[in-house]
Image (cartoon, rainbow, N blue to C red; front, side, top):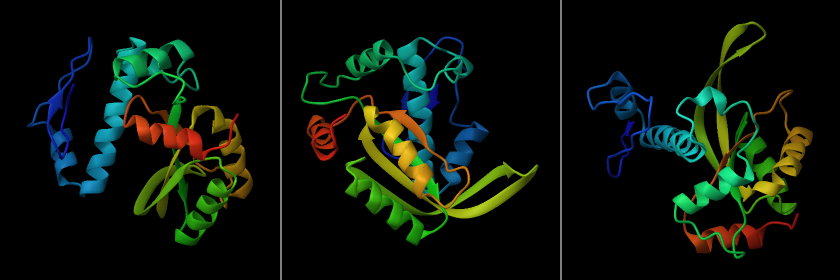
Length: 195
């Protein structure tokens, strides 16, 4: 799969996947988006590709059958990404949560940090969500919370969001962090509550 990044193009090949060429409509769509949306698309594609690579899955449908990677797959992902798997870091995740407006985002973010359920929450304005609800297509302006935390805190974080969110069905979606600045990952561990 060829993935274009705003920083440096790279390509990764997996069995049974198609190559996205520079003239592809997918690439044209990515290039026409704002830098943030383009970066988010690239990160999402990259994360899905990394998961598929580390779990040996070329097709994504087998991935979505389980709620998260197994410990063995997580360990392989950390090892293959060159991340320090010593006891100074813990398995960490990025969680996406959408909120209706800035005030709701700030309120929820502060409560998450105060409870030490996450080390950091970024509030990203100007997200437009298009989705199915009540049997029809809906579209709303929202803000996106990007939450960095320990994998082990996901159940508590999910319950906290559900209890403090304005929506009947709040989005809580987690992706594993498979590598990065070890000092930052240690900071995530040290800034969140123990299991």
